[in-house]
Image 1 (tube, one colour):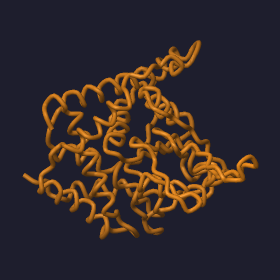
Image 2 (tube, rainbow, N blue to C red):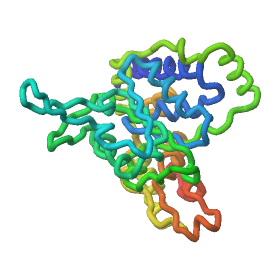
Image 3 (cartoon, one colour):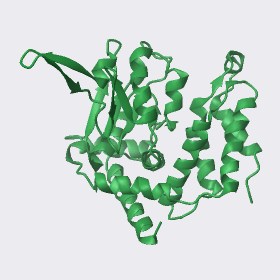
Amino acid sequence: MTSNTHQAAREVYQRIAANIAKIMQGQAGSTRKLLAALASGGHLLLEDFPGTGKTTLAKALARSIDARFKRIQFTPDLLPSDILGVSVFSQRDQQFHFHEGPIFTNILLADEINRASPRTQSALLEAMGESQVSVDGERRNLEDLFFVIATENPVEFRGTYPLPEAQMDRFAMRFALGYVHPDEEVVILTAQEHNHPLDELKPCASLTEVLALKRAAQDVRISAELKRYIVSLVSATRGASGVQLGASPRASIALMKAAQALALFDGLDFVTPDQIQELAVPVIAHRLMMQPQARFSGQTARGVVDEVVKSIKVPA
């Protein structure tokens, strides 16, 4: 990767981050992780209480990039065909014609994904894992840039279905936005006094530039020692106390690729342990299934990953 390519990709990141910052007050860290998921080719799950800005963050990203954007509002009566598309018989030529569903886009917002049934949630599995869908026995490839941002409310809320483990594993990252500082909340009120700032947000990056950003992130170097460090972190979750199901090798891949993206954002052409440790919780924790007795005693997946990061020696 040449220094010019590196710098150009970093400038694309900075432009998008600055554009999102016009809308999202006090969420620089969340934006950084969001763009790391985008640049690494992964998908993102935002879990938080209603009204914290999950949908707004997704829309701000979509409007910052000159690309196709679709939104699906997940509801209990949503069907897989509502996501993937359906073949309709035409009386005119006596043939079936496929009508694409909203999944055929660049950025897909799956809003309140845990309000749909597990059957409908699973319609996203193939698309997120292999960038393709199979409808009526025919494989259809998705766009070169296909990025899913799913939002969910905590599963304790009424009318929600916990996401299956296989679905959770398809998300490169999961994190919460949290509540902003009161001073920043006052700024939000002022910004929305007359209209929503999203209405005036303009694209600041092209689809071609975002694809170049993804390629540049792939070219960031990572040493064999740091690859072993990543594998040590992930594999340690499989034998951790209170964990029923540890993280899979897909977690190792996601952590490596996301760390490469963060290193690029930081102006580096190689990964350091800092990027890996910053992303360990959002990349690994949601993939762990805790034992019931561990959950009842207050043990969390996040706590397990934090302990693993503290206990595994960092390569010199």
